[in-house]
Length: 117
Length: 115
Image (tube, rainbow over all chains, first blue to last red; front, side):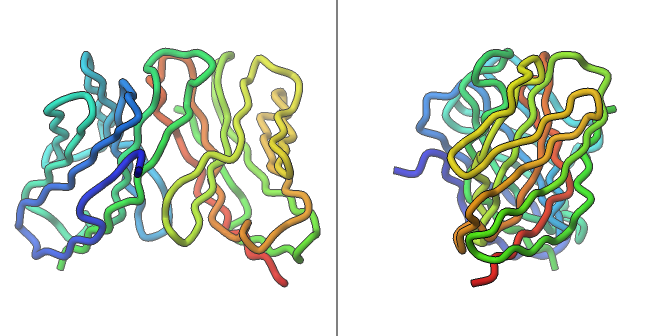
């Protein structure tokens, strides 16, 4: 069974469209994340979310919004897509929010490659 | 702001040999955590090794070990007995207490393994 799964794996769309990427984890983790990997492979945190708190990276445009129907899912909605949004988007989850022996151990999905034309 | 720097965009190693990947970071925190993640061509990010800053002993995981120099803010990864399956992008990453597990990544090092 895939621990963190994302759909779709590939998405090609036109500028100006609205799209969503879904993420589900079956690890029973409390916290989920979205990361963006650009064409130069640079990885950057976009959001961190548990059932109590959403932390948004201040550099993320408000066209991006995470939506969590329950703690096993964290979907990413993107409005008015732009060329610069083309990237691989990774969902991840972790066991706990606070520091401790498991701090920082993220489990990643396989990524969703978004291409905006 | 915390930053993580990997100065080697690409590295190459002969199969069965040893290679060291460099990572430096900048932080004003005293308690933090450092990681190496591997990204093979399949794209999925896989944790290789982690180090707690309060531990002086360097972490090891089988063929993978780190050289953690806290004063120098250096965290290098040594891969011994390199295997073809080690070929991947390697990312150094950092997080700190109260950061909510959000990782700051370096720019990555592409490791090629020659048979």
